Image (cartoon, rainbow, N blue to C red; front, side, top):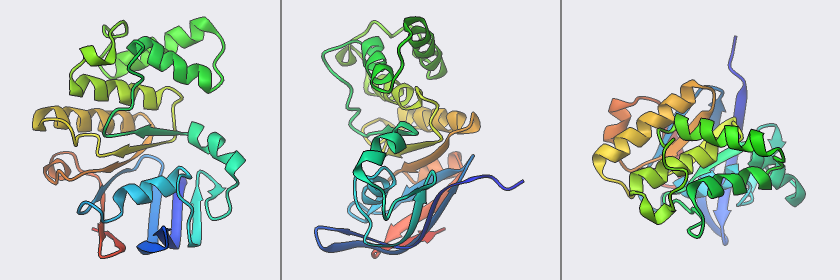
Length: 223
């Protein structure tokens, strides 16, 4: 049985402030895929990710993300789309004035969870999944960079998203910690979320294989 297509871009052009960033993009993500996006700084990797979660409009082409037509998506549909995606940023973006537990509670409540017991049990579950079950009471500044990134991944998987977009998740980490984070994302992929990860660290591709797309000269190439 063919895996379900989650993202399908055909001949898509992506512009930012009148400048062409990527042209004629053809890209497909299926359930169960682990995809690396590689390329130099400024080649369009993060820009492409932004189009997947509706941060950036598309100039032309055909594009669907989780059955939403991204060329004609309405502003009011974007929150529903984003609830089905997990986003992992390089710079963590945790709320610094509250504990790990409160950071995760905030996201669940914002996405419609009401039952306190359900919230508590889901938070316990995701913290165990990322190996941080004893860190719920900590403030973000009390954690190392690798630990913060694990919490960011826990936050991204709270609502069991079909797709996780990880923008340079190892960019601010040392090599060994970066490897562990990549391994964790591969484990999450095996449990059912398709993953797109941008990276500069080409060594990770050999160690933790996946499909590879490269942004270069305003185009996206499947390697």
